[in-house]
Length: 397
Image 1 (cartoon, rainbow, N blue to C red):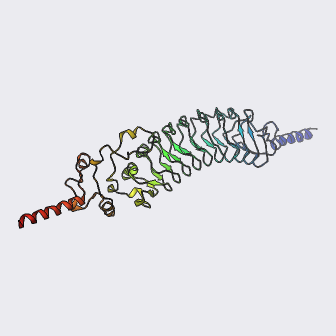
Image 2: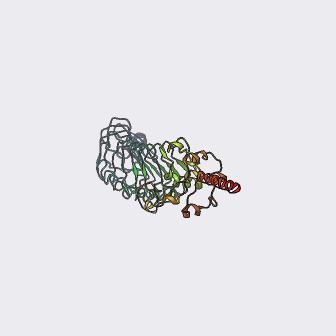
Image 3: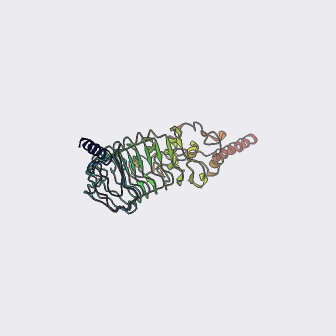
């Protein structure tokens, strides 16, 4: 009987190694499980709910491309570091639905086109979350506390939704965020406090929106920003102060906007003169004389007729930095429009009048601010003619 006992013992050992007890490595139906790291893959199985039986110590759970419609507080009876739920039919996420996933680092909810609304507190408890994907979900609004206490978040994907408004302090808790993707929405304006708290942001993508107004202090916390995309919006102007706040910018795209290159463009033009960055073109739409020209390459003479900055506008919320009128317009140098544009092609940007007709000290900035008498080139020529006529009459009299 000893040989038989040894054979039975060997069979039991083999069964323990190969078959393994079900309670140790149970895998949900229709899913495939892999060890080291523990991965549960249930993708593309037409699941309508989060399956039961996912091992508690799973590190990666893949539930993408199913038909899951709701996420409730009791949907997740396990812990995982990576959770993919993209490509489902999620319409509702209960507040605190992810609160049991205390070690979650990556959550992908992208491509859920029926997810048009989020409850405040939907991401409660995810204080270790580093990457959050919510692209192409048709989100129209975001609750003011949706990102509350997500202190570890570094990557936030919100592109290609239907967002038309970003609340003040929406991102204020995201002090470690480095990448923010907001392109492909319907955003119309950037307020003073919209990006407050994003002190470590490196990349901000805002292209393909409808932005037409940027507050002069909108980028005041973005000192570490290196990449900014604002192309394909409806911007006519951009405050120079906003760009000065984003002092770390290295790559800037502002093309495909209807830039106005009148006096309101001077702050941005001055910023470009000092900036050492890689930038797209900025084609002027107005005034008509400058249409098709690049704002970056305008010259100082192009702003010779512009008034001085209006201190009152600096405290406002509009993008206009220069006023359109001054109390004493007579103190400004007057140039005939035809003569001004005739001299527009001169390569020396410091020349604002014809050499023989320039008034003394014309290139001195004090001349423009303090002089109360304006003499045009045509007036000088007329005065010279009168002097010649007077001299001839004196000689022959």
